Image: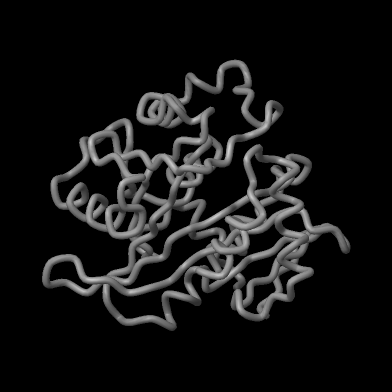
Length: 240
């Protein structure tokens, strides 16, 4: 484990295979407190597929986690490394802390370094505007976005990765994934604060994913590279 501490919160990432059944159950219970539609069998199967997990605690209480699958695939004649984010949750009482973002970026940089020297892309499925906002805050180039059309090369890449991973659940026309058993944000988390929709990034998310309240997930891509980090993203890696 690689622990990171921030005030009363601490975060650590590990290989998913190192988790005990009790730790996986604790993660599921946290997800259930914030999402409708969490199926135990589906959650367990999804966890078995993942390769890495970041967890965040406040004292001894688990308050957040994020899972990911790191793998290599071929798109045309090019071999690419893919980091696919799975379930991610942070208790609302801890939203003001950067510990999840800092721990996640640290984990992803370490995972990328253990893979090839080729290009590495992050596939993020976003079912809420707060998750989508992670992109413009920490990454310079990402898609989809409000101020730039999706380049043809990125569209082909996104569609190829998503068809490979999600099959018929992926709608290439909209760039949205609709799972048979979707997770839906519970009422408190699904509320949009007054004025939040005025943010062009948030407005873009709502436009691109109008079914987000029903659990529809917007497929997003960004390249994992330190040169692609914003100033805020670079602050996250200082001192690691």
